[in-house]
Length: 457
Image 1 (cartoon, rainbow, N blue to C red):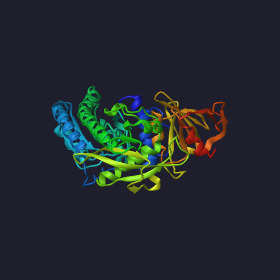
Image 2: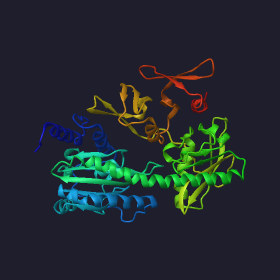
Image 3: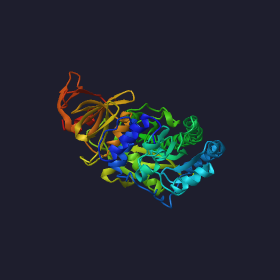
Image 4: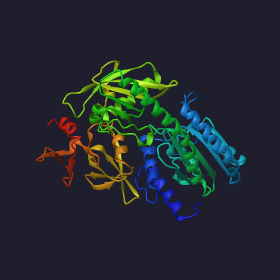
């Protein structure tokens, strides 16, 4: 049944994991993490025999339609080569709904019988670990081979996929997939997926730059009509331009345009990012919407009102103008300004010896520390590497749990695990954590007011 010992190891780990054990010896970390989501978060039946039908009516954005067309062109150009190799190519939307399929006639017939065909749903939440669904959660090409699939019914398949993402929000727009039945994928498959995605994203980049230019024009017009501190942000809350006063509050350069989405500034106020993203949701469904809320800034001990006005280009939302000291528009619900309910259940996945996952409750993690793209967790079990890359990603994942606060560009702390606060001569703060090592965490000057408020000191 298995061509080598590595495949046998993976299948053995799959059998143990579906029984409820956490031993993932021989399994790649990205696959093991996906298994954990499939079993513990989505509770997908590993012996599922039928792929569910997709939601029949899904509205797609203009960017998604552009991506579908670009990927369709790439897939059609590759179809004969894939067919000659006995494979199939599929395109799915951001919900995992398959839209189109090309390739070998015999393999397509087998794929259709198994649900690898248009109008079936391949999200992780629907069928567990698979190349399309798992690629929608990743920022790179994902290759899933045989027993790495969560559902046993797909263990005869080897697949690879890559998601094309919005350059502003980084949300997936579509996913391109190639699959082979009872054989390995061609060695060129991953490279072709990456090349196709890069080609498609180039089209999106030009559109995003044009949107950035329009935001600058809207900012300049508003700047001439008001003296209130003003910032223009994109739909994800990244700063395109901020005036002198707003830039100080946000911790970004003043009057320095960032039209290109890959070089825009990240404001050092998480609540403003939350507010911008909530405004994106509201104004997408209601183009006439304007809103207001209150957020804390480093310049005041009391929350400051902000007003948000969406900016559209040809009926397409491109960002928001945010004015400080203004309270016009619909008041935000309190939970949408970054105020969250502490204690929401969440697991943080760490790795031990690369072959075993450690599923940690949030209370077990005192500090998350970045070292480049690697994140280290200071836990009751010692210092462990996090399964995911990037402290920003972890901070975003924990945003709705409450209790975690970014106190420094390198440190995210669990406020309930702070044992002591040490004041230095020049007013700097140093946090002493209650982990086994009593880890010392510096607080940056920019984050000191937020830490004082959070700890009531």
